[in-house]
Length: 112
Length: 115
Image 1 (cartoon, each protein chain N blue to C red):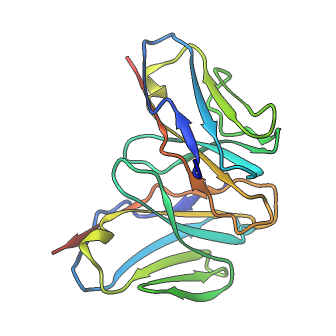
Image 2 (image 1 turned 60 degrees about the horizontal axis):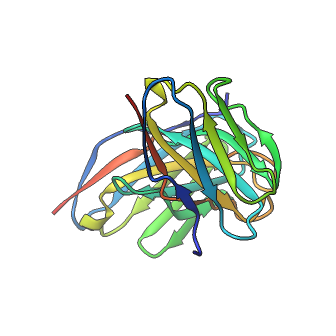
């Protein structure tokens, strides 16, 4: 059974600080990993994807992947109240006919 | 429209009724996924199509759930004899294909309430 695990939170972070979100996965065959943001009552939207070990930066967001530890993280710098949402970690097999598995999500609350 | 379209957005059913949820993916997208999202939970995989072929239906909770995509575009998720535990948001997502980045484009979802 392929699983993606996340701490459900809520994670409370002061405005302007760094928010750190973590995720582990069970399937060593997973090659592609995604972070989606979901506002209450809305659908998930992609923030970042990462395939290679190491860091990937996009604006205030940095995704980190460690395949040996089966660990994925998302850092949000200079957190804003608009970052308050549920963050979903997901994994799958790139270039394969396979499903994308989601974690249960971490609720992030940015304190003004 | 340019995005994934789902209908109905809201559906209230009495226990035992059959329901059908429709998904119209982004034009040209090969892959189509259905997920079930209960309140406060992440999306749970139900089934996956590549064109008209249903490649994985391992997430369908029971034989009351059935999905099809007969012409490789619009898909329908059918739930027979609905039960209260079927109450959830049903999300449809599409992607260009298995050799793309893997990004899923989600519709707004169909919220099913079974009384």
